[in-house]
Image 1 (cartoon, helix red, strand yellow):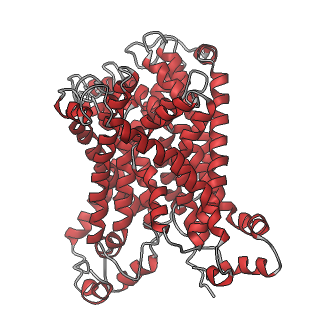
Image 2: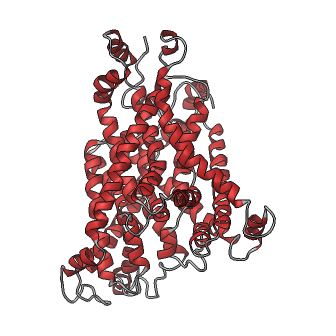
Image 3: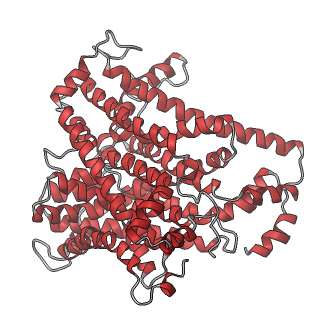
Length: 289
Length: 299
């Protein structure tokens, strides 16, 4: 850090630079958040906890937590732990590397609606996949990959994987390759280099990536409506919150659901970030995290 | 595991030195598995996009390999029916306003966070990290309520402000490491020659930060085009961006011809793809959140 405080005694005017951003966040993030929190304790009827009581006793509200987690956790785990070995492979510069990286990142541009439309057409009962499987006699039965749990899960993987891949790739390439080279002169093969050099250094980055990917998957909304069964098995918590706010116009209940959603999310994030403590800590760092 | 263990016990004890036939076979199987997974993923996505593209040009397509006739009229339909021209214009306005404002408040904040140590810095970092860690719906619903109370809800400015909430912290997150790797001596030199903070910023820092600013703005741009939830919650009929209009088009699917929706989805993909390819042209994806060089030694 620069010894600016020593040069300009008294108040450091550079600190003013952070004021607009901080004010903005206070005004548009913290204030609405606190407002929502207060609003959630002022229900239309009943005591101050009536909304939360209602959420945890109503049959189509509290199971949404489980439904959301059942979608978001597997999707995030698949995204992160499939992206990890692929990104590890792509860390070495080669002719293919840049092309493969670009190809794997392109699905970011698809957008939920195109993914939904594509899956409905391609996986549909008379879609290309069904026709191909029938033609080759690989599988004759009906394919049920849309309008159910699997449709939403596949859509979450397609939209989330490129992001996880990009993030992990940038963490891996941030690790000094000299470390791995040193290990290889001592006789470590790629597997051992990964296990003993990369994985410990990647720990914080992986935890961060898991959190960011989980946020994306946890707030699944459009794909749950378009590809799932929004009344039944993929009625996720964001659908419940949206319905309360914009179909029943009960902003108080909607805020309560939103707060519960945020709390569940933060519990998972806190748990994952606390796992960082298990990983290596020391003078050599992954560079970021 | 601490550093000493990696150095002595760790490496000496690594059982990777044996190069038996079994491990070589295992490695080959593992490599094949990885390539298989990647190929399966990409091939299926390729066919998925091709299915949408085919349908968007199809006259009628029911249960055959290829449609019975081809037409480009769905694109014209989508253009007229969905008022795509105005939606695209709104999207451009929102996206560029968000990028400009996010840079305007994000870069100076990133500068201070990269260069200064002060009390409350950790709390401030948390304040900037939190919006990226909380699902957009969670703060979007109370935010929409507040915006509608102040009269900003449903307007273009409401959408811009809502989209800035994840965009500004994102700029700060990307820019802070970029600024940290610039030698502070350059700033001191500018000061010695009498530049004030503003001139130092414009003439020294901004040119040096060019690549970083470009990277951050392109990434914010791609993210903002794709950000659904916040725009969905705060937009009115005249302030919908492309992604939200597209959702409504599918949601009211009974009314619209699916080909017309597919045509619109292809337009959406083309818009995002162009910007992503531009971004990848300038930004090596492997340097997204990394320091480009090692930390310079402060004198």
